[in-house]
Length: 116
Image 1 (cartoon, rainbow, N blue to C red):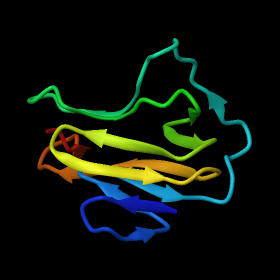
Image 2: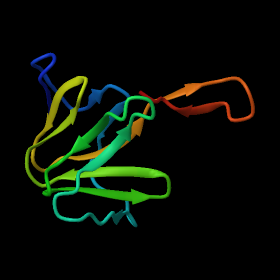
Image 3: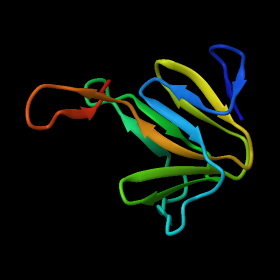
């Protein structure tokens, strides 16, 4: 479950600005852990304009990738923070797909990640 400081409510999924954490039953087969150095935050989205970031600082949270998809696994309760949003806290044992909000634009690209 995810608890929102902004609403005071808990839910299966949680939106944090441009980032959605969608609860899944398990990691997909073949997902590979993204290594990180001690003390390095997981950055789920970085604002190109502001430099602000949606980040998880807890070393007990692991980031995985398969193809273009990302997943986070919370071995213990931890928060997702951002300079302009209240913290979302995911409970221990949760596996979440990270979905970046996109916006549609005219032209050949047709869509791009939303940027702060």
